Amino acid sequence: MKGGTTVAAPEIKYTEEHEWVQRVSEDTVRIGITDYAQQQLGDVVFVQLPEVGQQVAAADSMGEVESTKSVSDIYAPVAGEITAANAALQDHPELVNADAAGEGWMVELRLADPEQLAGLLDAEGYRELIDQA
Image (cartoon, rainbow, N blue to C red; front, side, top):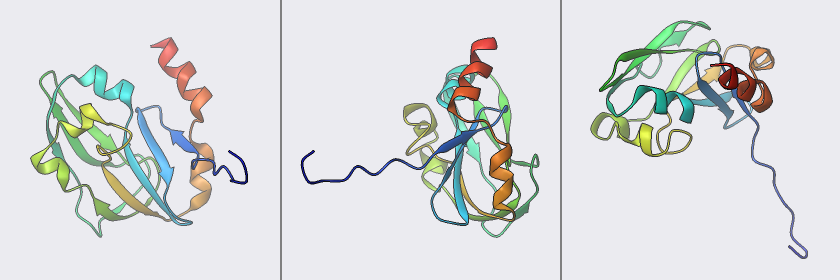
């Protein structure tokens, strides 16, 4: 692109529980489940998300995803305060299947400690994890 600049997409981190974490600002991240996770779950029929303002510690259960196959917990990959929950999932839980890494996002969280992101998997590490599954 002549004369233009390419802006790299913010790096996405991953957890061993098949969640993705992407910075949306200096101190806030957006969290959802990975495409791999939604494929394993099957058709998502219900999503329970935490309340805005709720404090979570890393590894705390902060909601559930119910599918035609099972119910799975959503875990907080890092500690912080829930600043937004994707209200669209109440009426349209199928967004998780249709666009897990986009419109099917779960929550936004203000980081208690941004350094916790360093402990999450990068894309290559996550690929290795699911290749072993």
